Image (cartoon, rainbow, N blue to C red; front, side):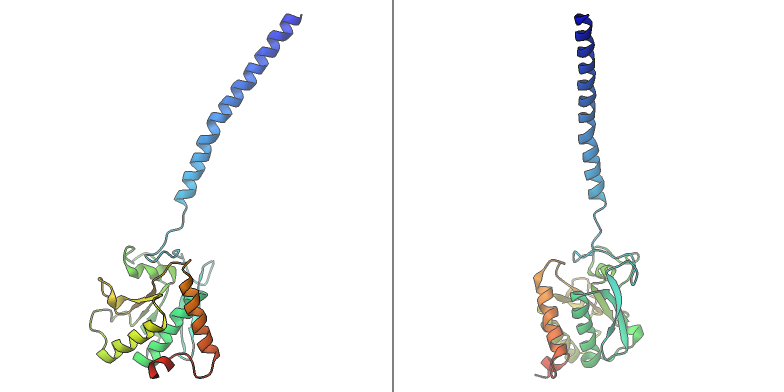
Length: 208
C-alpha cells in the first residue's frame, strides 16, 4: 500500500514539474512578443522629433488658435509651441508682409508631405507656412529677410526658417528642438512676458 502511494505521488509530482517547465518555456516568448508589439506601436514622429498627429481639434495635441490682432487662426501643437509659432506669424503679418487667411497654414496630414524633410513638421503641428505658394528662394526682399532674421533672433534658436535649409522653403517656419528641450519653454515664457507687459512684444525689438 505504501509502495503504491509513493509511486502515485511521484507520478503526480513529475506531472506538476513538467507542466511548470512547459509554462516557463512559454512565458518568455510571450513577453518577448509583447515587447516587440510595444516597439511596433511607438508613435511616429516628424523630422524634429515631435509626435505626428492624426487630426486637429479632436483627440489631438493640435488645436486651432487665434493669431492675436490679425483675425487669423492657426492649427498648432498647443502650449509652448503654440506661443512661439503664433508669435512668428504675428510679427510676420505686421512687419514683413500683411497676410490673409489663405496665406497661413499650420497642421496638415502626413499624407502628401515628404517625411524626411522639414515639411513633415507640419504633420505634428510644430510648423507653420506663411504664403505657402511662395517658398522658392528669393521670394522676399532683402529688408524683409532682415526682419525675418530679427524674428528668428526673438526665438533664440528654437525656430528654424526653411529658407536656410538645403531644400529651400521660404514659407516654412518650424520648431527646431525636440519636445524635451528646455529652451523651448524658456522662449515661450519670454514671449508670454512680452504679451503681458505694455510696450513689449511683437515689433518692439525690431524697432529698437
